[in-house]
Length: 397
Image 1 (cartoon, rainbow, N blue to C red):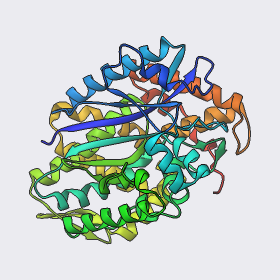
Image 2 (image 1 turned 60 degrees about the horizontal axis):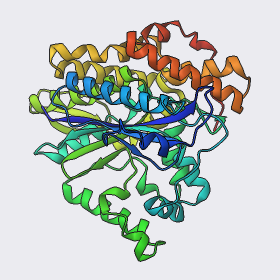
Image 3 (image 1 turned 180 degrees about the horizontal axis):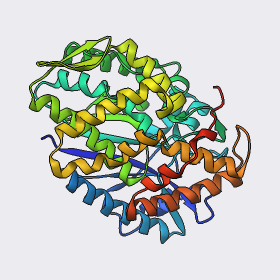
């Protein structure tokens, strides 16, 4: 099976849950072996795992690096939590090098929003039939509904997954090719052409010194990015450990099922398995599921049905001793609840309405920190089962 790895972003807060623009101090800690790196704001760091040959190995490595990050943060009087910037106060942006060039293209306000959205990126080794794999993994885009942790962004509540909506339709509004769900590829030449078109558009407003920071592959901020040896799945919010592992298991399992069984990948108005092929939703249908998923999450019937199918498919593709990693997703499907639902209810207990003030945001951040500790110790399936999700309301965007 292909190697798998993850990149995950963490927000830095103080012990009261308030945003802390102290990434440089954390990164300079002597415990940092290079697995924790800077991001586009001074309040965010990213962890990178080495490639793993199994989910068990990935689990161990992610736990090891996060434990190290937590110690690095604690020694600076901080916590590192897996959530976007929920409150109204934006982080301090980096301005050096590539980060400053990004602001030239996106604009100050959009770049501020970008730096407030924290994500999870899963890397799978590219298979020999890279186009078939690319289309298969792209068809799993609505799985971001399992990973939503952004019912609020910069103090505003509009939907279940504000990060996905914001990145695809607001931050990159002037550059839709750079962030929205691309069409399925007919060949690697299609992907090459998309990369070159993005690259040219992104470099147009930059001077030669700024343009030198980029390559064609890294001006793609969309849901799926082709790297030199991996496909990078970028659709998910940062999240708790057990859900990160469940998402890794979902992608790894579906990929393994299709390639082990030698199935062709064909677009269709529906989805399902044939004797010789897997039918994946058309691009148009995928866009419908995308919008339903970021608005209503697992409460949408079509999204729920499709993700239930993907979990069953992944379970068939995984070794018996790795299937337990999908358990949190099964609980989420049974309860139709994700972490965004949990956080929305917690926020509602602090403050009514569609806005989140700094004090309420700090309380929710402390709650995320406590959830992360509980999750690594015993999982959070009991939390999901206990949520009275009938009371959740997302305000129209």
